[in-house]
Image (tube, rainbow, N blue to C red; front, side, top):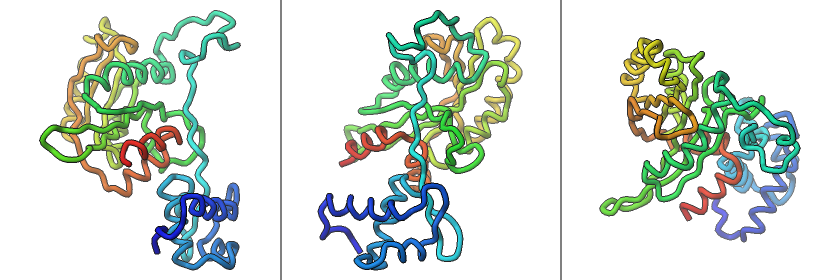
Length: 277
């Protein structure tokens, strides 16, 4: 069944009706949910509306006899200390600047550089960058499925028709946590993204000390097409060095859609819909 005979308002109303019958915390079986909806809901209509909500990241499918669904808490864009708005109480007392020894301190400056310099260098027609690491205990697919930062955009080419979507993931590592495992974390993200990267913060004065582990990371990353970027100063794009470019892959569309639905904020998802209308 398609929704061609329904207006956008009627579709929205059906979505809200179905969502209202789903428990706040617990999953519910498809059969039980259809019974709750009652008259006016054919089996075909139920599946179309249910799948629409799953595609948009409002519900997620579960196991059980006949399958089940569960609400997905909306992701929240994390506001980090360096992103505090001027005039807010958080800025009332002086705070020492980050020394970037903790991974959390790297997210905001790296996201800012990705947004303001790196993405422009990539030649996107349109793009957005979001910090996705801090989403609390919200389920986003299991271990190593939540990247630290994502960049989403599209490109067009003069002699190739269409718009080409890029969903690029970044695994961020401070100097104290650099090891080959970062490559495997990035590789796990690539199951549902077009490119995967490791960004490691290594101050220039310590580069020699860390060169053996950097070489090991590059050797492993090269096997899998994972990109490797070193940042001397996380706030300054001119100190970033790309050691390996990430290979582009075409992930399964279902996984890619699920990744966007679970990782991106509503604002990013709305923007993507407008890009591809």
